Length: 451
Image (cartoon, rainbow, N blue to C red):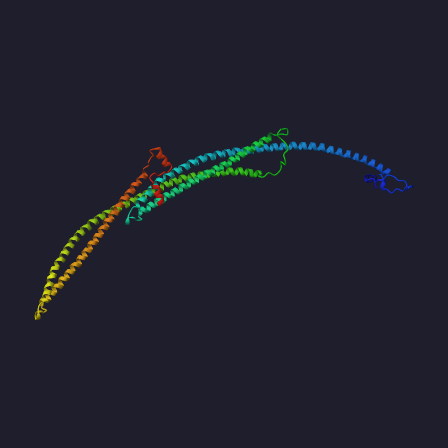
């Protein structure tokens, strides 16, 4: 075993070594005892360990000085590189700030334009109130027609078509207003997203600018607990650019959609005006045509009434003559029957059936047949008179119906003249009622409940 190994070997106390004493009867106190070689070895080990510790310390000091120089240079370059990165980041954030500000200005202008077009569409939608009320009033007026005149004629179909056209126009305009409202909401939403993104860019710019101004001598720096920990919500630079680009592209897309919607609204208003004017003329033509047909039918009925009254007068004269003829037959029949009955009182062989008997019987039969024929003809004449009376009442009823229809058709045409007359509110109250779509006549509620 070498000397270094022997030095590293722990010493064994002499008390643990077997001692052969010459005087076994001598009592000694038990304590640790070492050998002399062990003492020398122990001193050598201490000297050797001290020298080796000094060598290790010298090497450590040299490594520390080298590490100080290396870490200083590396820290300086790291700080310089990060300063450059922060400066570049400031430029990039500032570029997107300006881009977002320009886009927000474009969105503001489009929102104002879209709001103006929406209000124009709402005013035109409000103007549809008068044509619809007049058309529905025409329906209610013509529903007053009675009996056979209450027909589904061309005017009825045109008025119904006009209601459908107005309802279709109102639905289109209402849909356009709702679409414009939604488009304005989407523009404002895109604007708010741009504003939030711009505010975040301002905050990020301020933070980057503050970080760029910081140095190792700044008073507000210090240790932070785990600053390199993963933060929830961190994204990559590509995602950052994509997010701002998405907000900008979304706003530009909404501006494009808003432009197309404005063009669609103008086209709808123009087409609606044309359709309403065309259908209004068709309805008015059908009403005038129907009024002409009713007036012609009314004149025909009045002529029929006059002819029927003349025929009834002639029929009444014939009835009087027939009744007189029937009354004139009764004395003759009584005379012939009385003669025949008196001859039945002849006595004995004088009760013969002679020519007189045959003649009286023939006379009675002839008079009875003539009376029956006159009565039948009188009955037929009275029946004809009853039919004429019924027909006269029917004609008179029909004249009343036609007169009522003519009056209603004329009223409907008079009502439609309001379509060409714009009533200007005379007072502030009337103006408010018109703006708030208030109906003081109560007709709107009736029309809406019916249709």
